[in-house]
Length: 227
Image (cartoon, rainbow, N blue to C red; front, side):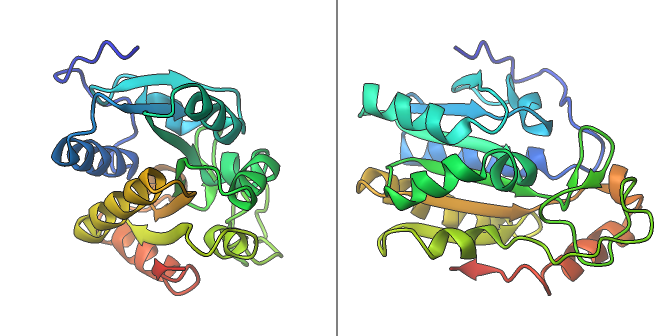
């Protein structure tokens, strides 16, 4: 149970995109009248800092186990709106197996993936979504591999009625539209996933306009829209 204090300060780094995603989620649930039905499961990583961010039932899961945890919750409480909240590492590295099979089985849950191209909480190491040539503390000469395209990978196994999309935190209108569609897809009995391209100025080592330009460059590799 989330004992939310809406006046408590954010625990995220300055300039982080997580609060934008969470506020978009909270506002959308409120407008849909689903806040009391919603259950938010958090992965380990930056996403765990959302524990007291929204006035909805929220709990931590094991690292990479957001998808099966929310699948189990949905089976036990079929009237709930089950939301898994994770980073690109939790989704596409340690959590890839369970996420992929949740999509394949068309489990009626919604997974929200925040993609900032690095393992942010642990210092900015190379992640599954790190760009080819991107320098990180574990790849100082630049990553040699192309990034995983998560929603596109899910599309290969997901039911045609599953909703898979990618948006960015600097397009709040689209983000909220996609969140609403994803929740409606869950209500219709199908799997849904949204990837959010997100700011990480702490680990990108960017300031101000640089951060915005970095995000825009990500869109050249991670295509925005419904997959």
